Length: 353
Image (tube, rainbow, N blue to C red; front, side, top):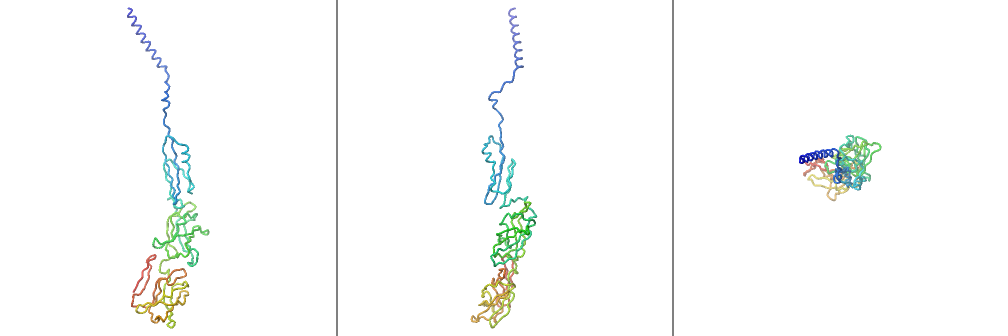
């Protein structure tokens, strides 16, 4: 009986212990995190905003680049330094970049040229040679006219005249917008430049800008007042006034001539056999007439002449154009020059019988 009593007590103690354990779990509070757990937090990231960087070069080309990358730490001093852009080398507006990388437009010369800035109204429409005197020390001028008012000349080296051949050209050395016609620019070329020898006037891209900030496209137009044809140079038309006594002849040209000294031996006559006899004395030059004389002691006599000639550049007109070689009269036993034709700028074709 004592043994049964002890077993009953043991069973009751086990039940009571289990009940107490359930109460303890129901009333317990959350355990505080350990020091190690408290120190674990998500890693913080910082974003560096892009900064435009402009570098001045001899060609005035500006390029701005910007990048964004997450980093763990940021040095405040470095960030402040990177946020400062040196704008002393550019006249263009400051732009704020988005986080994505961007590239600034390239500027040519002093013009901020982008495809969106080109304006059809700013096209070159006319180039005209202005009155000139090739014998003075003053510049020679060409008037360049555009489709809209010129607010600013942005490229002083972009105005030129050119010939049939691309390498034959002359660049203007001075420019100014006309107050009386603000759609036009007066371009000055070196004194003595024979502008009539060119065929077109041209401008490079972005040489002028209007008030809407539009610039021109590169354009060439015909140069009014210019000619590269035969008519641009004096031509020998005929020889008259043969004076067998004084042994003289009068050469008649197509234009009034520069009455400076000339070389007599640039003029002459051919005999029937084709033998040339250069003149010995330039007697006079007036308007379109040149009188020369031969020396009888040299065996020269205009009585033997059948054909007369003037060498290339024997005379010049009052604009400074020299004559092309020319010959007039009857034929000789030798090949005779009968025609000269301008093929292209600086290229001439000579025809013989």
